[in-house]
Structures are given as C-alpha cells and as structure tokens.
Image 1 (tube, helix red, strand yellow):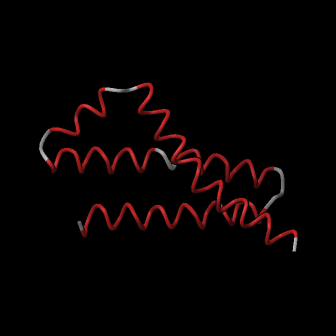
Image 2 (cartoon, rainbow, N blue to C red):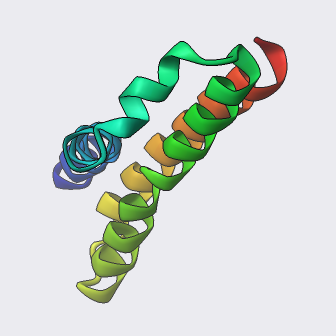
Length: 95
C-alpha cells in the first residue's frame, strides 16, 4: 500500500510542479503575459514553449527520486509528465 501512496504523491507532484513553474515564470517575466494580445499563432507558439519548459523541473525531480531509490515516486512523476506532454501535443497540433 505504501508504494501506491508514493505513486499518487509523485503524480500529484508532477502536476503541481509545472503549475508552480508557470506561476514563477509569470512573476519574473511579466512581459510574457502582455504578449498574449498579439497574433494567435505567435501566442500559441510561445505558450507551447512555456508549457514545455515548465516540465523541466519534473525531469530534475525524477532523477532526484531515482538517486534516493524511490522508483514509485519517479513513476508517478513520469506518468504526470506524459499526461502533460499529451496536453501540449493536443494544444499544438489539434487546436
């Protein structure tokens, strides 16, 4: 049962870390929010890049989890990252 709780904790962390990263980017780079009024294709391209960059901390946390031999937490992180990557793919190519 412990491994399932760790897996869920990794999944939730994997979803929350990119949101926190996006918030921090918006706080330190407010000009990125002002760009949202321009051409739709430019905004879509910028948003896609931002969504991809905010997933980088998930990769760092994954390697930290592996370093401390916590594979279940890492599996949860990877699962959340794959879900977010699917959302980026849908946003990029289908919308």
